[in-house]
Length: 93
Image: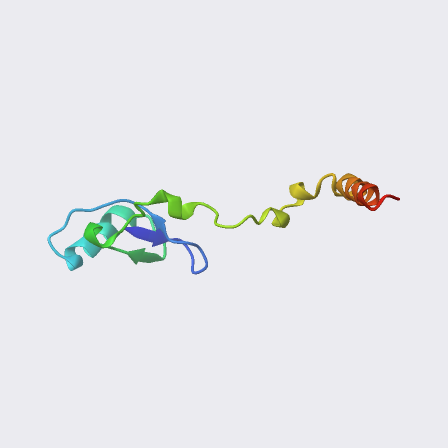
């Protein structure tokens, strides 16, 4: 069972019910998890319809996008100066 408290809020897992059919599951979920108006929207989903990611390597970052983080721009000026010095060295200046 998933619920959300407002139109722009995300759905969150609230619990589970055991029922014979979807209508009974909705009724039981409403009675168990909405008694005190904890939310505005309700989803009841069969456990067999929920799928999990079995291969966690799919969550690894495929490309280096460290440039998106400010912490990776530390020492940029020093690195640039060293690169310029090395280029001058190679050129023979």
